[in-house]
Structure formats: C-alpha cells, structure tokens
Image (tube, rainbow over the protein chains, first blue to last red):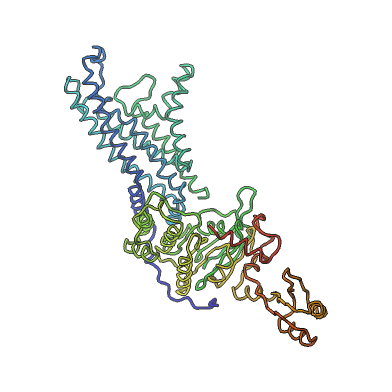
Length: 274
Length: 320
C-alpha cells in the first residue's frame, strides 16, 4: 500500500484562468468545426444574397405580363431584400442547435466542466454567433440589395440606398435575422432539445400569426403588432403593413422579447442540473 | 484531495446519494465501487459541479468545483456518458476545450499522442469506436495536466490491451502524487488497480478501507474444499471441532470455520485418507457482492446466493 507515500512533485500546468475572451475563442472553434454549421450559414448567406436578385430577374422577365398598376407600385427595396425570410429560418435553426447540439450529445458536460461558472459559455456562444451572422448577413444583404437594383434597371424601377426606407430596411433585414439567431440560442438554452426548440420557434413565428388572423378582427388587430414575428418584420421591410408598430418600435419590442428569452435561458442554465 | 461531506442528492422522490462522506487522498488510486445504480455517477457529477447537491458539500483541494479558476488544470474528468459532440473531430474537440483556459495547441497534440489517437485525431468523433471514444475522454481529462483525476468507468469499452494501458497510466499518475478517483461496478478491475476502496450502495457509504484490509477481511472466512473416501467420519470430526460443512454436488464438501492445516491434522489423527484439501479464495467479487447485496437496486441482475453464480452475473454485466 502506498497510502502514506509522500506526494511526489506534481507538474501542474501554469494555471491559466478561464476568461471570457478565451471561452469566446473556444466557441469560435466549436462553431466552425461542425459541418452542419457551415452548411446552415452558407444557406442563410445564399438566401439573403441570392433570393432578392432572383426575384428581380423573374420580375423583369415577366414585366410585360404585369398590370400597369403592378408596374407602378412595384417595391424594389423589399423585393431585393426578401431573402431574409429564408435566412431567418436557417439562422434560427442554427441558433437553437448551437446549444441543443451540446445537450443532445453530452458535450455540454465538457463545456461546463471547462467553464464551471456556466454563464460565460452562454455569453460566448451569443457573442460568436451574433458576430458571425451579423457580418455574413450584412455582406449578403448588400449583395442582395445592389444586385437586385442592378437587375431592376432594365425597366428603370431601381432605387438607390438613399431612397426612403431603403437603408433602414437593409439594416433591418440584417439585424432581424441576427437577433432572431440570438433569441433562438436563448430558446435552445431553455428547451435543451433540438426538435423542441425548433418547434417552439416555428409555433411562435409561423403558427401564432395564423391563429391570431382567425380571431375577430378587432381582437386580432390589437394583438397582431405585438407578435414577435410582426414586431420584427416591420423593421425589415420598407413598406409598412396595416396594423403594425413603427419599424424602430417593432425592433425595440423584438429586442425586448429576445432579452427576456436570453435572461430566462441564463437563469435556467445556472439553476438546473446539467 | 477530494472531500465529500454529508452529501445528498434527490431527484424528485428518489434519493440517489444519501448523506455520503469520504475523502480521496493524493498519491494513491482510490476505487469507487458499487453496483449499477448505486449513485457513483451522481456523486461524481456532484463533485464536478454538474449537478447541485440537495445537501452537503463536495470540494476539490478545499474549493467547490464551480469556484475553480482554471478547472482543467486542477481536475481532469472522464464521464461515463461520452461528453463529446459527435460531429466534431477529436482534435477540434480537444482544441476547443484547451482554448477555454489558454492551453497551447502543442499540449493538444501531446495528449493525442499520449492516448494513441494520432492516426484518427482528424476524423469525426461519430465514427469512433467505444474504445477510441474512451481514449479521447482520457485525453480531455489529461489536457490541463491536472492534480486530480476523476474517471467514471474508464475501462468501459476498452479491449484488454486498452485496459492494461489505462491501468498503468493511472498508476503512473498516482505515483506522481496526483489524486486519482475512479469508479467501477467490477470488483475484479478494482482489485488490480486501486489502493483504496470506497464502496457505496443505494447512495450510502458501505465501506471506506484500504484494499489490503478489504482483501484480508474477505478471505478470512474462506472455506476449504475436502474430498475423502471416509467423508462421513471426517465430517463428524469436523463438526465436533466446531466447524460447519456443506456438501457439494461432486461428492466433496466445503468446510467453513477451520483452516486447511487443522482439517489435515484432524484427518491424520483419525487415520482418514484425504483425496483433496484445497483452501478456497473468496474472490473479491464475492466479497463485494455479499457486502452490497442488500443495496442492489436491480435485483433481477443478481443471483440470490453468493457464490459461483455471482461471478457469472458480473461477467455478463461486464460484456458490452
């Protein structure tokens, strides 16, 4: 028995502390080292950059078949930026999966043992995911907008970035998709299961608006502007629908929902057994 | 040094860990033994801060795991369930962990070579065999060159060569003065690896003892196997000497409470021929079974008697 053996000198590593920048670097590595992430980000980028110009090409090729009213009221801004609908879905799914992928595989145990304060893991995930999607979506939206406008010149319905609502809609489509991603990271932290997290997103963003639509119109119109999907989309569109909040008001509300979800996620991460 | 003090954890109505207290000292390998479902994994998760205790504390070097500033440098852990994203390569998994506390890439390469995963480090973990996954887990545990190692069923899924490798690795780490705490439900594995034993059942402490003490206690009540053409006469002498006998199917008897020497002397005195006189070892497996049999959660896995059957039961459990 060696119970009384004096501990020999243990060579302990230099004892570098866990810091937020280090956890951010770790999350950066984690994000790019998964094939599914790279494909989802590529899909979101192609959707945001390519769908607008594609719609512009279709519109121009069908130009002679459009009614004079359609030709006169064409909305070149929203048509060139419309890819955000699909980009938002791709980023939402990826946002959920950045955290639920860890829970379903057990990776979360490794992550939390490496950073036992826990919250730095969530903050780092949010910062990395928000930063990456922000840069990608901004580039994609610029390509989509100017690409689309270049195609619209064929029938002279193109507008510049200084057109009323153009710059705001461009920034809006970028921020809406990226903040949706952050919201979904929070959602994933609460739900912890991929299918459940994505389902909840789909219910809130796609099913709920449909349900509100079939309410009596006075009730529906009172609720409608405050739904997360509508509060957000008013910010990403140049043309304002009836019964919506102002673009910046809608975005502020959307950010409020996002912060609420993230705070609940953070509390859950701290309180629950991993 | 790991210190567990009056630790309890309940999940709803179920008490998984029940007022558990023990210490794990540096410089030796401490085995954490108990039947499946005894609460070993839960105790380790409580020590590692993954689950919060209902009551009591668990500290490593005097600190709660959550308060460690550079946890991977202080504690290396291998959990029973693989804690790895299957879509990532082994190298990227280790790199991401290393980056959280500034461990350099050279160390990542070092541990990959140390566990013998050099040729598959850039393959996705999803394609790994159970043994390779286990080696990756060991690599992650060693990343920060920690003073304490906590390993939950480390030999699971390893081939005999892998088992020998990890046994020698752990012995080497303990000899360097590190605290090594490993769990197993297999006594035979512990017998060859651990210096000290902590045995639990149903979340409660059953034994906290040196392996040598456990072994000597276990073999003190061992029976002696006897064959003789004059068995009836011999049995009478043995019973008169205050011992107990048990007949075996093959015509031999087992004697409890007398040493082989005393039985031989009795036979010589009575001029009885002996055809066999074999002191039997109670295997540690049997001793483990007998001290934990009241606390086994999964009774259907266990035979009612303690004896040869117990070995069979544990062997079948060991087969992945």
